[in-house]
Image 1 (cartoon, helix red, strand yellow):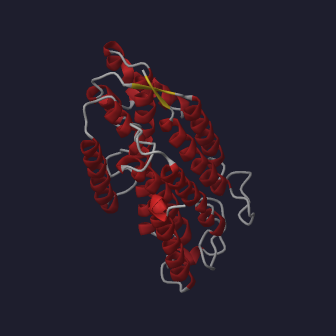
Image 2 (spheres, one colour):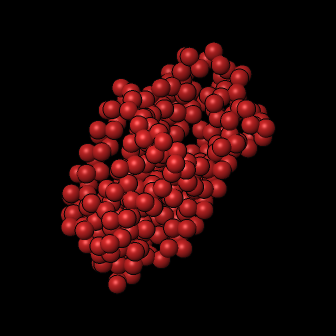
Image 3 (tube, one colour):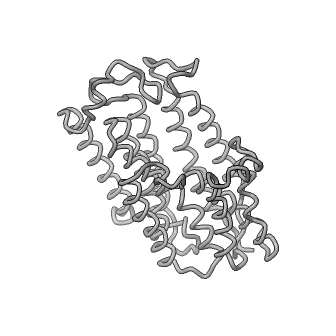
Length: 315
């Protein structure tokens, strides 16, 4: 085995181990846990698990994030074993595939910082990791249906991440303007996937309406949207994919992996809803936590979506 072939995997592995070592060490020394949360030790956290005065504030919800790191490292391993002559950005080592695998790893470390410390900056790191992942697929879909170069794609991605990270630091999850970028990005992802599958000049015009189906899936009906437009003003963003996706995709995709990813994610979401203190199934001292299962199933979903983007065929 040529070590250089797996260079990127080893770098990711060393970075992951280094993070875990530093995180465990600082936690053991009591240097990064929230002092405010110390007043809540012994009580159920907002995600059901009892707040601990030990190494991590929420032990199970913290350690379950290792699943993301394992999946991200496995993706790096797969990419390093690929041939380099593929035109698919999700096959072999390149800027886009490195970004995807790295963000999956960061999903784990970002969430660890929140559940392990119960701090505001930990919540910021967790939220940022979610945004870094969820905007990637729909931006990649736009890139695949436009004349964007890889550098344009990366600049757009990094621009959104930087602006969001600063804005989120000084405001809250909805940026102070009633705008949940994570939730909106789920809609943009489904819209862009649908547009990729059924691209045509006429479908571009109506593709934004797919976003209303996503809203309905999560319990928000169209009449509620229009009756409270000041609250749902961001639905106009559902037409972003249509604006930029000005050419038919060059490849087709095998959607079974996308649906497996969605099934995994929606299953995780349904379990996530039960992981709160006032739910009848909440057991704060159990080693099996709903939020921990959410982490494991969403980590699995990132792998399914990775395979989905590898499954392209020439039209």
